[in-house]
Image (tube, rainbow, N blue to C red):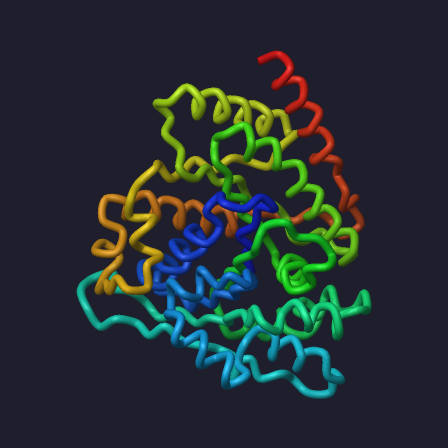
Length: 315
């Protein structure tokens, strides 16, 4: 089953809320074994799922992504036991579609930067997760979700590893000029990861429109633009499902709020998250990867940037 990165190199587009929502519905609605790998040192996803106290305990017990990466760097004679680094958010014994179990790998902000600078110097370090971890995760989980920070390059080797290990990428965007204009940078990072890894993965599964009100002029203009460009093959496909602006996105990531079921947690947003999850699962099942020998830099970032510049100049 797939490993999916939720990634946009621009911050503030809802990567963490999308990751959390997808994890909750994969586990609680579809009953799938789900692991979340939180590679954002801010730990927003981890805090929302298991709370800051559990993160602090994982740090003190050396059960974080930093400790996992250190184990992966040891000679590859024996398999690393991932379970010793996993923190579990247990399932809730409640009504239909209650919250399901979610396993989690949490970050360690104080050590992550130092570890990247001191112990991750070689090119091999960019694909450690793919080379030593991916096969094991695919045996143990139905879906693995990877949450990323913004502003990623090769210096952020944790996030680079997460991308290199992933089969797919979901790119959340907002229908604004600032966010759309940053999309070519995101696509270029993914091309660089594929080239560095000598792989056709990760493939962009789709672009997901977050906080989108199609009644506003701004959303209409930019949604129509990216849909037309995607139809021309100069942008990855746009998901049919989208999320409108809605307050549950704020409460669902508040660790102080306690919920028993998905409907209680997401309220009026329930159907939106369910539709997103269902569409992503269908897209994963239907996706066909290109042949290994095909060009990994397909130029889509450059083509979209040119189309975007023309669009902005004519607007």
